[in-house]
Length: 238
Image (cartoon, rainbow, N blue to C red; front, side, top):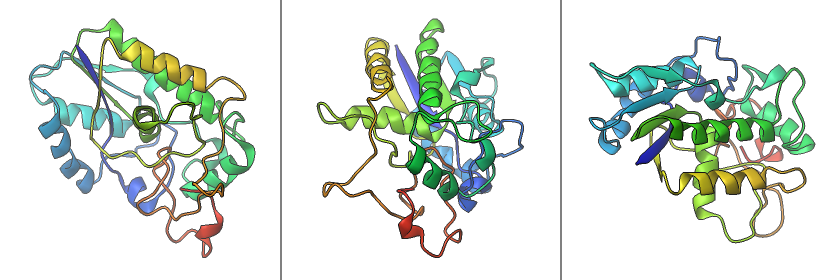
């Protein structure tokens, strides 16, 4: 059997490049987000899926429900698939959080947050592994960071440590993982999250990557505001 992990559709927060790690906030799919679901309709075996799971966030559940159609199996809600808790950065431009993360690292919790980036990724991976407890094929609707980590795992070079920043994950494009492959993939990533293993992402010249949010946003987002700073090149890769 196969587990399909995908990022929810776009939201108005995506368009404004704001972060949302609080599931009680009513951040829903935009019209562009609804249109983006055609990717899922074309790439998922919708009539064969036996288990649908989503995070606690409205945009993830909305994505799952619209893909499922009617009639459909019951949607399982798994908090382990939730977006990161951004603490004091909640609702702010992503570059604010990215600048803090670049200075403090993945193992430190932001002010007001209950988890670090490393802890959040570990939680999400635990949720993916738990999918094996349910009949397949399965669809998990989660958030960008999780999908980016899974995509990075597929293209990593031997010995490469998990970076601090990842390329932005596409919306509603599933990552398919077989039941045989899934435990191995999760196990490898969990080892990458052990203290002291992770490093800052760098380009081939050894310098930090500095780019604006448009088109190269880190997957933990909803990205970074193009109007947030007049000198975005001085902020981390977002």
